Length: 158
Image (cartoon, rainbow, N blue to C red):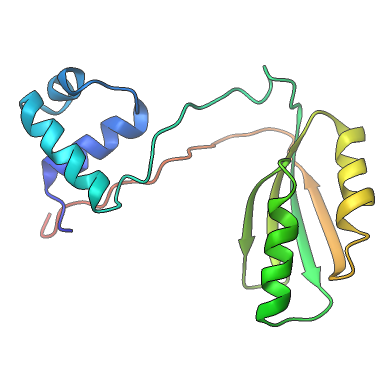
């Protein structure tokens, strides 16, 4: 799908507020509400917009600790990757998981209530996993940027 300036403006506005009505979107991007509706539907059908959701406050919901965990597996292969992906999917405290290049095999973004809950997750679940050979953790002390959106690409030729 080729995006024009209006599509990019719509995407940017919806990333700021996914609950925007087409009327509010119309005002934000300077396009009629019916055109915004048509374009939004096209962006959804094309898979550019994957869904909508609310941003929740981890701190206000009691999740005071965020950690980044680097995991190395003891062996590799498609079956091992699939098994580890299934393992990670079982734990809601793992908010994101990435297969990466570099000195780790996986990077996990973990949210827990406190250090005790974090230690329990690591020592009762992650370290006992027979696939895991090494775990290195960093506790997030302060978040300086946490933007869940992506910058919409500028239109070609701009």
